[in-house]
Amino acid sequence: MGRLVAVSNRVADPRNHAAGGLAVALSEALSKTGGLWFGWSGKAIDINQGGTPGEGELHLQQAGNVTLATVDLSREDYDAYYLGYSNGVLWPVFHYRLDLADFDSGGNLNSYRRVNQLFARKLAPLLKPDDVIWIHDYHLIPLAAELRAIGCGQRIGFFLHIPLPPPLILAAIPQHEWLMRAMFAYDLIGFQSQADVDHFARYAQDEAGAEPMGEYRFRAFHRTVRAQAFPIGIDVDEFIELGKGDDSRETYEMMRAQYARRRLLLGIDRLDYSKGLPQRLKAFQTLLAEYPENRASATLIQIAAPSRESVDAYADLRRDMEGITGAINSEYGELDWMPVRYIHRSTARKRLPGLCRASSVALVTPLRDGMNLVAKEFIAAQDPDDPGVLVLSRFAGAAEQLKEALLVNPYDFRATAQAIQQALHMPLAERRTRHAKLLERIRAQDVHWWSSEFLRALAETENG
Ligand code: GDG
Image (cartoon, rainbow, N blue to C red; front, side):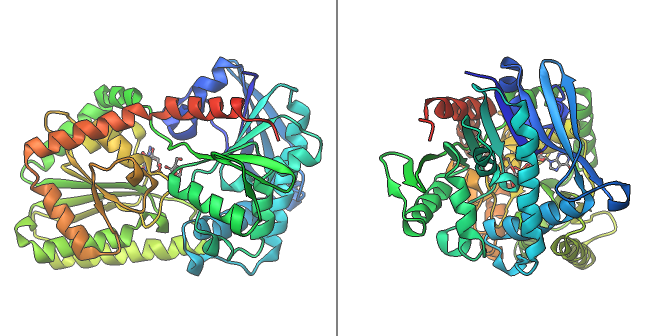
């Protein structure tokens, strides 16, 4: 394989696994090929300091044998491309939330295009003819089309980390035709789940008049694209190792000691409306109301890492969470027991396995999620002899794989409460059987499998 060039909105040092996420996923393939990782520098430059829209300085930095190439953005472009279009239009619509999408501001689309053009202009001179380019996520959908427009003929793959909605919902985006046409500039498109692939296939055929060309391949706009599911995984062994570290063990001991007489339920999420956090709290409230034996015992620890705070919908969510938490705690709390521990801060990654292992139940109940890695991290962190139980939303991409979890509809508070009750009282033998199967599944399709399968498929996909 030629050199791997990865492109994503944010770039991390691939040697720093503590960052988790894409750094773990891509580090192996990047360092094996002496690769290049390209993206935004994280700097938004104000106009009075020279931040001109459509322009930005390129920075090159070496991380071992991997080159990190990052571009600054003007404040105006950052606000409109990142907050406005990517997170104000694409994120809500792709998560089926038409009610939260802001279609009014045409300027945001201009910036979205302008930033993708800027990335293409800065990246193209760094490319070699036999590079393999792998672009990530919704911020950069039109990047391949922009690269092609300035003459790049390399193989280009794209992975969408979030769901792709059904055609009718996708078509609510005023520029959906342009956006989907841009997808045909790729050679391979990876989705998280089969459901997403099916939505793409239906859109391509019904709205774009694409011709199916056998398994996974579609032809339209004089190009052939291959679309396939590559469910992203975690580095299972890395997470288990992290669990053996001092910080994790200390967290485990501390939680066990402090909650010795209680049952812990755990939620770990970015504070995002797709994660179903208010609904989760209401399901927990229903559990306390309908199964009173859990009062003074079941304790929900909800970690909600701050995210995109300058987007209005996120500020509303924050207020809702504080309101519902307060209502539950004041209704059911005792002098020595608070039902909900809501922490609106990020927790150190090295403590997460300990926190997971100390918990009897994980509540991973998004309203819609591309995959959801927390579900897989929870499984990896458990003691196989006495494992906790995963309550998982059927609307998470992970539900296609993790069939031995207790699958719930997060909008149905009573049914979710019932599943939590079942999880809290599940016999040890059943917990072990379910966990063993789940562990096997996350091992079989871990993050190394994910990146090597994607890159293998990209290498064997015909160019164009
Ligand atoms: C997108 C898609 C898809 C969470 N809180 C803290 C923290 N985390 C870590 C978790 C996990 C990661 O962040 C979150 O990953 P998710 O998969 O749950 O969700 P998104 O951020 O929405 O990611 C998603 C993913 O891309 C990958 O393709 O699965 O569907 O939406 O690793 O552990 N980490 C630390 N402190 C926290 O407070 N350190």
